Length: 128
Image (cartoon, rainbow, N blue to C red; front, side, top):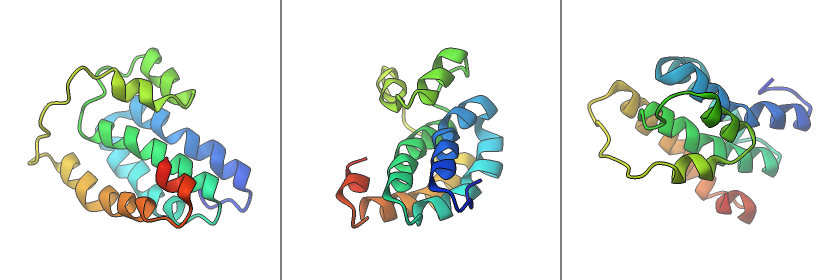
């Protein structure tokens, strides 16, 4: 669906990435979801790139192991597009374990895409 020619279909599935990451955990997020990111970051529709920004935040938190339990409360928060609730619900962000393979995946595979998004010519994408 990430490669669908229908933008609305791509958007629906992009919006589900964070929720899926919360449900499946670090290993499957790293193996199955991270490889889906590159075409989304380069999508021709700015709304897709905007939403990718929001979902990347959640994916990074999952990879860093900072999401707590994967209860329905967290999942529904991501499903409703309220990533800020997930991020602000963390009382304090501990230092990441830089030796973790998931931290390395995040730095090597997601950070370059985050840089692309914050350099996006569309102001709304940069603000997301």
